[in-house]
Image 1: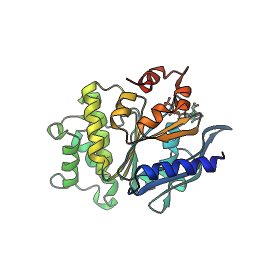
Image 2: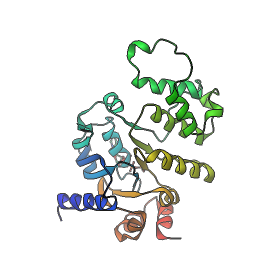
Image 3: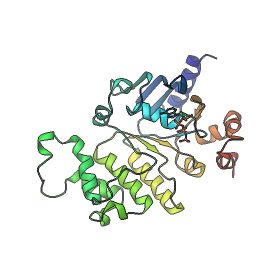
Image 4: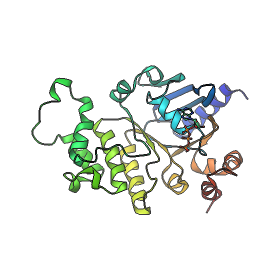
Length: 273
Ligand SMILES: Nc1ncnc2c1ncn2[C@@H]1O[C@H](COP(=O)(O)OP(=O)(O)OP(=O)(O)O)[C@@H](O)[C@H]1O
């Protein structure tokens, strides 16, 4: 089966799984090479609007590099069509303005600034440059809304640096909300969180996922099982398979790639209950 055929099959699978969903990002033959090493190898996949989509795979599979390519951080070949634009040929700031945002494994909030100030700065992405230096009265509605959605209204005036680990990740998600990101890539959002924080994060993704496209890179298989609507599996830069959690868990190829890797814990998770 050629790469083209396989991509076609997987695209059909995702479309069949959610026939009414609109395609948000259509990635086609995406490839990223570093000095002759191919980190992402001819990957084609669809990301649908309203779907919480998980990207999994053993360490070094190419997940972060794929997201780096779609957010303008590394050069790539192929195409990634979003709202009539090809993300592959766009610079990071233009991608953000187009409504595609991401978080990183390590939170990137400004610790000395308050929660509100962090959100206000992030929201500045969509304010015209000449207005930025002026103080505006009150808190804009979209910032209030984001604060409420991420559950940090009561902590709006505390420095972001004193937030708990989970709260910082929620603030990062809030920063994407005020940027009006329609597509959000989240890199291991629940790493280091306790069980309650993980559940709250999952519920948050469900709440904000209805009108957006959320793509989560994740190793925590319990989290994947509980919150994934669609799972794409990568291995050695290639797309291995995609499907519902049940389909992916039952796929012997997926079990095989996890065996003997550093992600043994994930295998236990994938093996069942
Ligand atoms: N800037 C770079 N230069 C050279 N090689 C790189 C670079 N960035 C990533 N790689 C390599 O590309 C491969 C894919 O890495 P990547 O971080 O995308 O994997 P991943 O699936 O996100 O892994 P993890 O789950 O461990 O975060 C790895 O072999 C990595 O060493």
